[in-house]
Length: 91
Image (cartoon, rainbow, N blue to C red; front, side):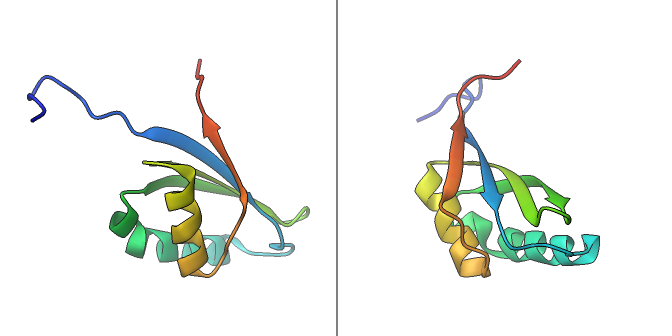
């Protein structure tokens, strides 16, 4: 059992999606909401997403148990990616 003084530390991940060329902020928000609707089923939390509509890239910051859980949520939400990086150092 975890004492009230202990924290559970989840890993952080950054993932990259392709194919969002010309996407709008509203479309990014809809994709993000699709992730949020089911994220708890895998113990994942998507903190934030960024869009570069000219390159068609979307970047998502998430916490979760492992990169496979992040990938499963994105796939189920309709925007799969295999490009997921665990962020092990932060300043």
